[in-house]
Length: 142
Image 1 (cartoon, rainbow, N blue to C red):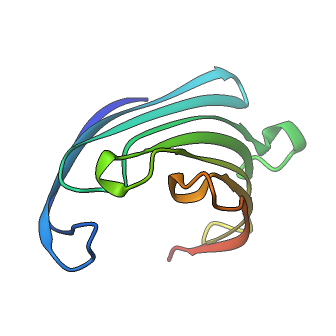
Image 2 (image 1 turned 180 degrees about the horizontal axis):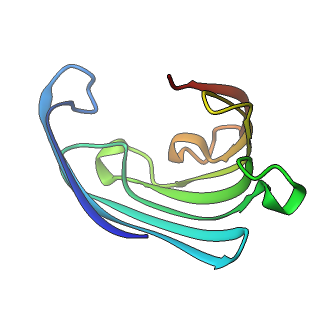
């Protein structure tokens, strides 16, 4: 799947957290199956208007479906990204998130997804400590 997209939010908050302003940008998203159970993906997003904390985002990753281990609807993935701090943010660093996730498709209606995210240089602030976040997402569809 190859996608080119754009966004516009005319009611976004500026970095001061009070002022409303327009935010807009565009991006490219590519998902390419490279084997029967493996897909590579890449994303690029660029902000073109408005004061935002990050004005460029890049992500690369891979996802493997559960057919490899006889759980056809499950998947496991690993992604890494770079979020470049905007000049308006007061930071000059690059946030570097990495996520490992698993999606357990319990049945046609319920999926559980534990994940671990490690974030280097959070907020683009080189003086900030790295952060690790554990999460569990649930998706119910009826």
